[in-house]
Image (cartoon, rainbow, N blue to C red; front, top):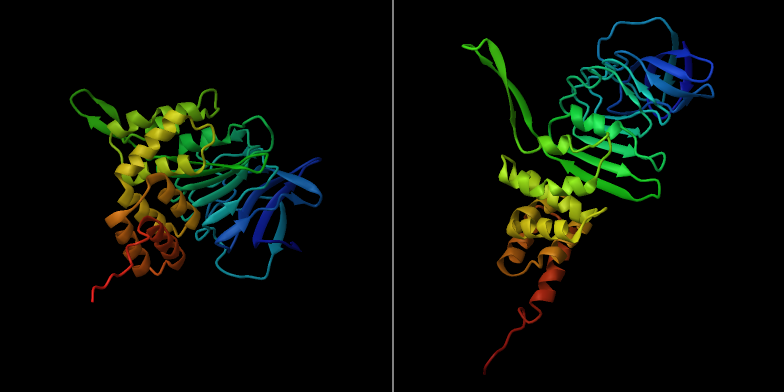
Length: 323
């Protein structure tokens, strides 16, 4: 087995082709790990069948150990955050099957082939970070959103260095046995289904995404998720129309207390500043937010709230005395 240094610990089984590398098996002891972009001067472009599946059977190939000095259990069961190779184009059948702790996946928008069941039983996967590699949008986001049903937080890193962030709400697909008619009835629960299938020709249109908002609020949904959808579009307003902006802002204004509490938990000062500006928070709500920030030990958030309180109530702390 050849041993080389790297950013993450890996035990790899691979196959060298003329112009690329195929990773047939990959096992790590890290909770956060990045597969190498290149090996031996060749780009890594293929992730094989069951490549990261825990307890997958060994396959013949060249063994390579990548080490960065840490040790742990080598079985991928504790893997929580994974960065796929930048040149990856082919993810084969059941490649990530059973990675149940995996909650964050980083990849480049080059993958054009996804095998069957490649994300099966990745039940914790809720965060995607996708890096564009050209002006033309790839198909990765459409595939991943179609495969994952729970709340999905997506960050798209654009070619020009900007970011687009989106929330795709959850939904459930349920099959119920219809005994008298000898078949199963298919039901969809939750207003998130159209969001996960908003793609046309595998391309995302943000105007169509925003156009789902009114219907989403009429259907079964989690208000906390709706707050995140509205806030995220206001914070990262790529292709956001004035009408959609007004709709999101009005919703947050009606749930200002919930939105502020969520942002205080995030400890995101810039996000909190946005809410204070958009919702024009004042009065009792501002005092309550200060108390919550103080009790949570969120000093940066508290400082921002106190500054806002001083702006809204500049004379509130002045004392007059009659002698």
